[in-house]
Length: 277
Image: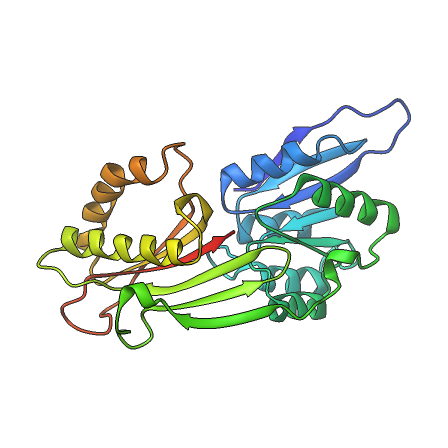
């Protein structure tokens, strides 16, 4: 459900409230974005917890600014942006993309769909505030975060993992303002689910260390399971092992998908990782 008027900031007498919609499926990120921009004068913040609630809100009222995530369940942020621009009271409302996806191809797609600004997670407060203030003041001019630079992209095998299993020891390193690591779905042999799960996370840790990173750098997991009956096993493994990997208790978002089979009948779990250094 849409989180209407989830945060309302006081306004100066006679000042016009500037309505800002924040769209992100992760509650912690919605609240963080709200806290970060609450210093902008006369802002009234509304939170939307995903694609459907965002579309309900943009169809029912106009906003002065929209902050939009891309990697969300359902139709996804790019399709939400497309629909906002196609037909809604917010066809001309400035939209700032706030996403872990910082590659130039994604930026170009968003720009072609009508995005006005782009902020890459993890968020730098000064960059976000400057982009928000510029859009609120400028009525939708493209800001510097949308200016595209050709990133350095390198695809390599992680030597520490030994001989590649198909595509499954590849790591893509994209260097821009930060270096983003896209670690291909990792597989590991093992006699049962727990053994495979432990082996997969050992491989991810090895790949992260090979890039000079660690668990604290991870911003997203995508986990593929062969059978829904393994979900409780995965959650039990996570409950047992994640406190060691993430001692601050802040676990990266995890998208959980069920597919019929992986690359072979013996594999029960595969995990893809995105990290930012």
